[in-house]
Image 1 (cartoon, helix red, strand yellow):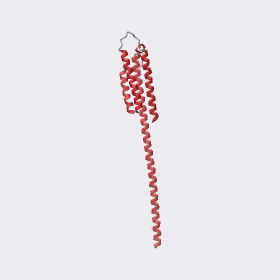
Image 2: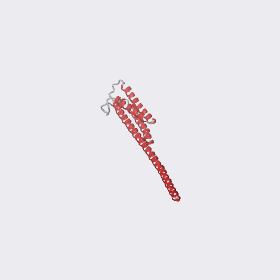
Image 3: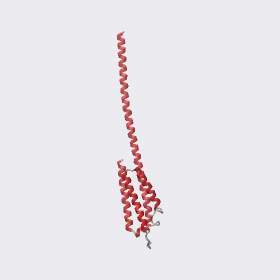
Image 4: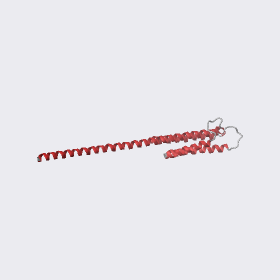
Length: 178
């Protein structure tokens, strides 16, 4: 009988040991799987945040360029007259909208894009100031401001394109990095 008890005891101990090892291996496997799933979920959330930031920046940059276009059209009205240029009645609302769009670019960043946007805004404001100075001149000439000051007008048009293109180049670079 002692042999039977010893055999039963050895059998039960080996069964318990095997069950314990199986449980330990299962626990370690599940732990690795859960850790892998958590890492995958973190990576996916990080990727989604990056995509949302990328889309928000893109939308901000597009809005800024649209505001630039509206400001340019408003300035065109000042250069060639309301009869021949599509645009707004007065440049101020368009310039204000450009400033608001610039504020969004400042928030969206990065710094290089914000700096390029700032240079663009400053060039628009400089053109507006130049236009106002030229409009205050007393003249009997009935030609448009652009016709009377062709050189300045063409220089401003060239500068618009340069500033806009510089902004687009920097913005594209920022969007490609992400």
